[in-house]
Image 1 (cartoon, rainbow, N blue to C red):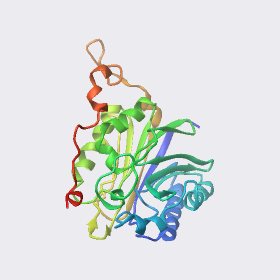
Image 2: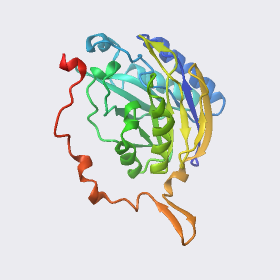
Image 3: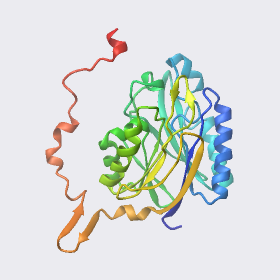
Image 4: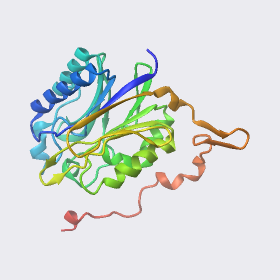
Length: 289
């Protein structure tokens, strides 16, 4: 198999606390997308469960182990259709919950990721921060990195995976109102600064007073938007890219006069403060009260 892949983003309205309905809808969307030639179908953050839980105790009954019933169900969908799938879910590990996503294919579970950067919002108020390094997963000869939502605001996340050889970074997300500039600017910037393809997939609808903004998008190596949803409702798009193009980090704009290599031109010895923790703690309003 070559390195060209047809990527499909599915921006759908997740049913809060209804795992069975969400898994069935993702299966149906996958069948439709694969019937139209999709190689990879990507769903939003917490697509299996919903996001706006009010406590850890409320969320625990909807969280699952990985591998577990939800991942097995979507592996079945992958085997039926031949497409790989990325979707978000809540992972339970003992009494802890992680905001997670997985990459599955007809071959089984290819990769899993626990959200590392957690905002004070929804289930992330009660989730445990991800405890595994950023990783790149092989999918039939191409390399896929996984992030979730708020991770896009931290350039170190994408850079680490790009240095590990990522051709494509996938970002399942739940962007509510207020995140418009993240969609418009952060996603293209992550693609541009790493010379990778970047696919961000948001959800549609409302949940417990939060309205989600859509704006799912696929950005190319120069940050240009290659495909995007048009509104805030349920919709999808597909686009074919040659993922191997991301492997050439040396861009010659004018031979002998203008060359850009964002990896070779790095100065890691100057970046020490990035890895140092803040010397103070910022309290949230809830903690202060």
